[in-house]
Amino acid sequence: MQLRSLLLGDESIFSIDIDDLSYSTGGIKVELDQVRLIGLDMFKSIDILDIIAPQTILNKFLLEKLAIEVDINIDWVPTMGQK
Image (cartoon, rainbow, N blue to C red):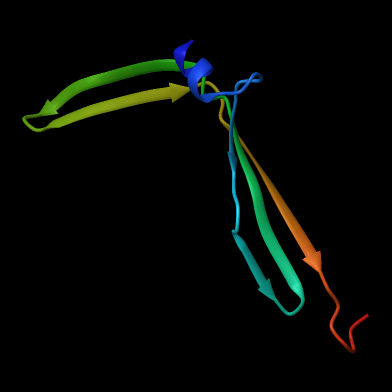
């Protein structure tokens, strides 16, 4: 419940807004706007602090489902001579 209230929005979605990440070439501009992770609060199993060596601790968790949504804008500005 703490993870949901601290990191996730109302719909259990972790949203990352991305500014100033774009690529332009030949009149085409591709811009990454937002990335959303869905399912970060649906754990199937958790195994934390498993000591496997003197200076090594293993943490494992299994999610029931993880979905990634990405918003990408693609703009095309024709240059002279292009239709």
